[in-house]
Image (tube, rainbow, N blue to C red):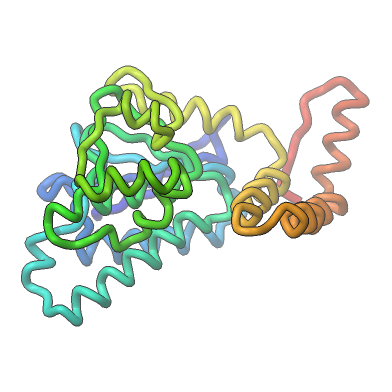
Length: 261
């Protein structure tokens, strides 16, 4: 197995760890890993009990080194095009998961590895993490969403500079640019991501999903259309049992027990 799902239990029930585990290739994005990744996304997307996903690496010292260049070298140009389209589609599938996704980055996240991390809702980096869209150094471009997601995150001019130069950044600089949301001591990214997931976990799961949808879709709309879409998302939470439970808990001065209904 090169991709592993771990459903946490007890007080952490609802948090799922999505782990990359291909140590011999530094989690390079090969055919088998991507096939398992797509299946993992399908499982997560159809499981209403999942409230937060934490994406991380099970390989010490690396998040994801990017494309599997040994596999890529054996592909025809047509096969490369199909494979990269598959990467783009799979990464969009991660971004489109209904629940929040938090990425924990330790070590290298280059090329496709950074493109994968950019699909998470939030990114936490250990201080030793290294990040970069390095594809132009190989005479190609980021093809799994990097040219679109990075400018939306840090602005077009900064994204162009990083892509044109194939620059590799340390975690602190990535944090200053806004590529990552938090920088923590090396080795603590997963613990910090889990702490964040635990902050999200007690909140109404339907509300959290609708909030994610409203923010994501609203970014591509003008303000008026975005407000109308927010209204449509709000309408989805009004008839839920969770909303009534939240009101009852507030009135009774107790913690709400949300069930995602």
